[in-house]
Image (cartoon, rainbow, N blue to C red):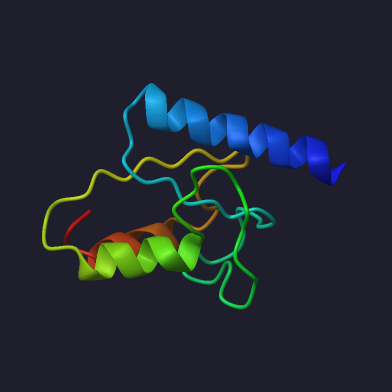
Length: 97
């Protein structure tokens, strides 16, 4: 159910912020590993997770505007993407990663 899924996502956010000490955590709540990385959340409403920095579009905006190096940590049950070319494209377009 949606409440249980939200609790699990909030737990993952907490773990990522406390164990590997990530400053920001972005969440794509209903996406598939086959979706393009830049595509998720383009038309979805904002999430209401605890201590969440935003969705995939917010993450891409932050990466694009960053002037300092970014360490990107992806946790996804199905993997970051099923398309290696899409991963290469996102990384090549964002030199701060």
